[in-house]
Amino acid sequence: MGSARSDSSGDATAPPAAAYIAHKILIAGGFGSGKTTLVGAISEVRPLLTEEALTTASVGLDDLSGVNEKTTTTVALDFGRITIGSRVVLYLFGLPGQERFSFMWSELAFGALGAVILADVRRLDECFPSVNYFESRKLPFVVAINCFDSAPRYDPEEIRHALDLDPGVPTVLCDAREVASVKQVLITLVETVAARRAATAGRRG
Amino acid sequence: MPPSGRWRPRGSGPVVRPYAVTGGRTEPSDGEVLDLLAFVVATGAVPTDDHHQLSPEHHRIFRMCQQQITVADLAAGTSLPIGVVRVLLADLIAQGTITVVRQHPAAERNPTDVLQEILNGLRAL
Image (cartoon, rainbow over all chains, first blue to last red):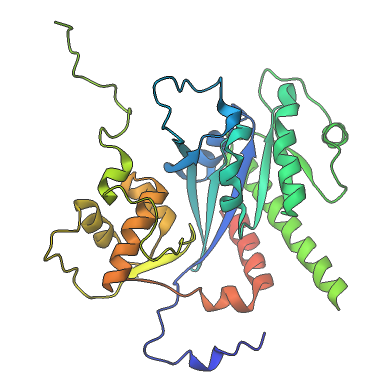
């Protein structure tokens, strides 16, 4: 890339370099779609506290009587990490499902590798905010249909049609409780990211 | 007298409001918002606290930074909100006791190689 600062890398005053490459993967989906289960299947989950602005969308939902000054609320994200080899760490962030928390999505989406949208076929409409959001940010994503024991089975292609997804967006069936299944979802996502980068690089030249 | 009125349910969170530990400040002193996955590390300098401005949380964060750690890991490890951790970190960075670490050199040069490494790593899990 011809960085003008590359010749200063031997400078004793330069800050140290990171021992790891850290990458973010977002896990989105409606309330109860299995995000916590998915993150917990493949990594140790810890809650990550963040503060969210209360928007007008929460009027009538959050009881604010007597606390008119309150403009933020604490939201806990599911946070997990997977160490890959000796120098890469994947960080999984479960996005709060409610649309009224989309304020914080932009920070989480910044620099993210891609996203998994976990879908429950009984409440497919809850995926729409995430699908719209990742499409508008041009962030690569996959739709993973969480196969709940009690839910009807659909062909992934039917789901793709119902969500009106672009051909480049994979839809896969998964069991968020199973490591092997979650692993496959993440592999599909990273393959999608790689394919898109290769296509972009090809167009450039 | 209500029985056991002073007990609070397990998991109800801290009694102290989160920004009490920052003295009510909600913005980092240098105005710079650190990325969630930015790595920080102790510089080797010892925190000076002649005016008792550092809270126990400052010291706790400082201790956790003896090895490189991300802002997100600090927040999860201390159970403090990310915004609070950023304010406390900015204080320690201003003191020169903690510094932000540069990106891993391979992350800048070979994004495609890194993707392949992630794929291989996931398959081997």
